[in-house]
Image (cartoon, rainbow, N blue to C red; front, side, top):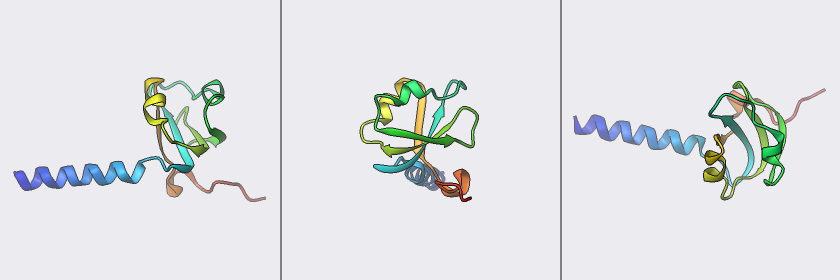
Length: 94
């Protein structure tokens, strides 16, 4: 039983670390209330909108996440790293 709990905790920690937002780079903003992330939310932040994210209302952004996790969470937005398999390349070819 204790081993199963330790393995579950280890898996949870690895999952959190895998999706922790980078200090700087591409990130995914996910609204917790289902409404789209607004551009007004981004204005005072060091983030630039790139394109819609893979989840309803989500947004891919680029910038610095320093100190933003709790600030965005209070506003109903979760900030995560943008994994390439889920979010695709950061630019479109043409």
